[in-house]
Image (tube, rainbow, N blue to C red; front, side):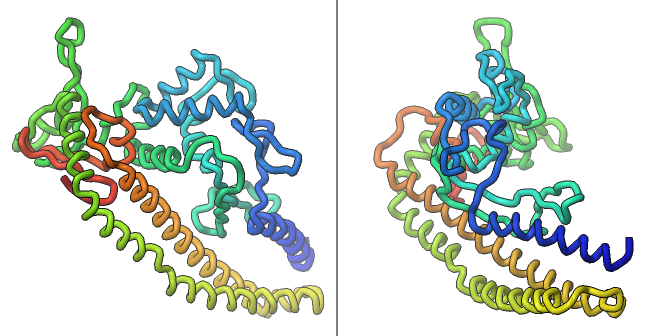
Length: 372
């Protein structure tokens, strides 16, 4: 194929991909409705909840937030006869994780998670190479944003144990040894008799030259410590909330980034205008390609596009972090009563980790950074 034919082919490919990305920029969602669990295609082409399939989605999120692993959930789904989006009854842990990570179940949509450099290439995971588009409240949610955020936090906390097939506790990777910084692991004592109980101890207690002095804890002891810390947190919330709001205000200040984005978009418009003028003025010749003029314009456009995408992603990231903190603040503001028993929801939603130094010295670090 001649250089001219190659350039024309590339131009056609880029125009088609440009159209696809323009639809994404406009917030238009496109997905495989026939295999997407939980939603059907509505009359207007949008997402409409499938009531029966939505039960499966809610079951997955509820089970995960109760401490079950994706593997355990997948086994339960098969035992209960729940079907996948394609109508099968065979489930895998990876399928459960994909559902837990999909923001569409919270009523939002992230577009262009994958991309193609041209029509013939394979799709690639978008790690910032091209712009992603976040569409808030794009359709009716199956689960709340709070549940979705809690699931993402829990996935992150348990990411190192997701490949394991044994059932994991909500305490996995979140009880830390104050001596060496290693996570506590569970061990069953008297597993075959009436004295059976689960204890937690430092996984590296006997692996270092100097044995860790931190004690083991029963699950009941862990729960009691958290309830005490949570109640102290509630008592002091009127002092904590103003600090959290001040931090959120700092996160929301994207003035400088917005200014840089405006400048980058202006440069992008100029670069795109030059390319369009060139394309409309005359066809690309082999001489144009050989002289490097076309490549120079293309490079200017690519640099401007990359900068625009990068700034957009930074701004969106700050806005998302700000929204997560606001939901955390709202949750804390509603805590007006003391707890007399352990709440898995509070542990998963508010606590980041617990650090054990001794039986008498244990700190709980909340997701806002406050230690009690």
